[in-house]
Amino acid sequence: MAHYYDSIPEPVRKLTNGQAIERYAAGAEVPGKAIAGLTSEQLRAFPVPGTWSIQQIVAHLTDSDLIAAYRMKRIIAEDQPKLDLWDENAFVAGLRYQDLPAREVCELFRLNRTVLAHVLRGLPDAAFERTALHQEMGPMTLGQFLRIYVNHLDHHLGFLKKKREMLGAPL
Image (cartoon, rainbow, N blue to C red):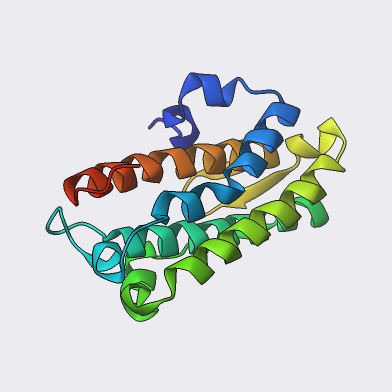
């Protein structure tokens, strides 16, 4: 079975640690800018039935980034931590993503990325080889997690842009 990391685009996998950190940090402002100008109705609309609204996408991006930051901090601070799983769809429903204040959610995303980027910039290159044991993906390095989350934002931003276009409010 192929490792999930292999599905990350090669240009992202080939980034140096410094380049990956800067791409990660540059993403801090992206969700907030991506929802700029949208009304509450547009944020909560389902232009593609059976998928998440823009509101739910930004809440998912924030929660997944918070979880990723926690995981990366554990890899930095602990010796080979075991990382638990989380159910993103249970978060969407259980945390009522559709009712969260989108702009504040985006601000939390921005602050989380900004602070973690500061931590990452202070690490030696060897720290990015530190590992954790992910329950599904097996051993993963800090560098792999960083690149996964650089890509995660790009991945969901594509869906968000498409939904904005469908709502008549392209970026």
